[in-house]
Length: 74
Image (tube, rainbow, N blue to C red; front, top):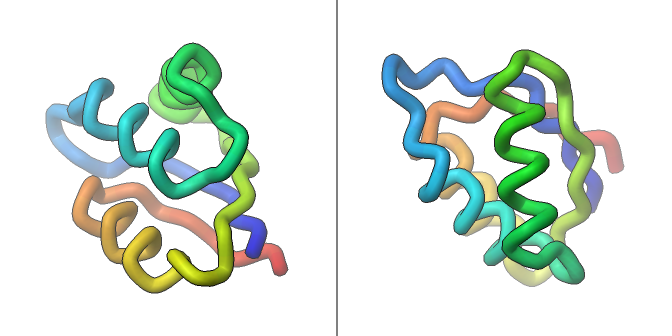
């Protein structure tokens, strides 16, 4: 499943928690790349990631908990 992370609406977004979430839900993304993607997301640009289908439900809940808006691409 592919996602487009659109924005983070949290008043005070937790960069570490967002980066950790991206690392955990998306296969093949390590910590340095997830930190870079988090910075891009918090700067206001959209980020594309791919999820493993078996984790999609819990991954989407984790993103909602962090106040991250997303759209499902595939």
